[in-house]
Amino acid sequence: MIDNEVLETIRNRRMIFKFKDEPLEDEQIEAVLRAGSWAESYGNCEPRQFIVVDDQEMKKKLYELTKRLTSFTAGIKNAPITIAIAITGCGTSHFIEEGAGAAHNMALAAHSLGLGSYWLDVYDLENRENSVEAEARRMLGLPQEIRLAYLLPLGKPAQEREVDRARLDDLVHYNKFGST
Image (cartoon, rainbow, N blue to C red; front, side):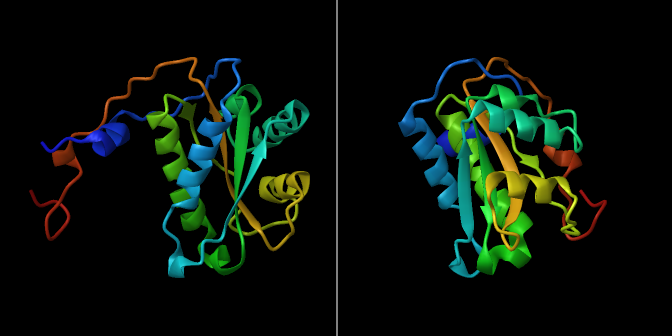
């Protein structure tokens, strides 16, 4: 099997939900943000906007709000920062994909720097006024036309996670489903 630094980072990255109570270096945060800005975008429109949330009270409010979506929200209030990934203008019709590309790049960059993260989708497909996305947008001061796709807690991991992966032979089919 071919192996290199990028493939190793992809293979070893796991979602981290528990973080140490230690600050991050500005250089680490900037590297993760830059990785998000380098994500591909439809028509090269680069519609991403990132809001770095380090205010404890704001993180606590986001934590309480996102509990409506999932039980995996503790990292939002416990990580030193949470990055909100928003999509503007030309990427609005592809906001899920645009946000996912940025979030994935950021999570891989974080892992490569010895940090932990996970991305929590907060978007509402129907863009309802009472959705978690809408309420989080208001909290973060985002205009209504900007979509909030993901929240990414970021910090030094306080856990190690080993996860078994499916065998590639069980996932890959050639020319038609069910072939080997």
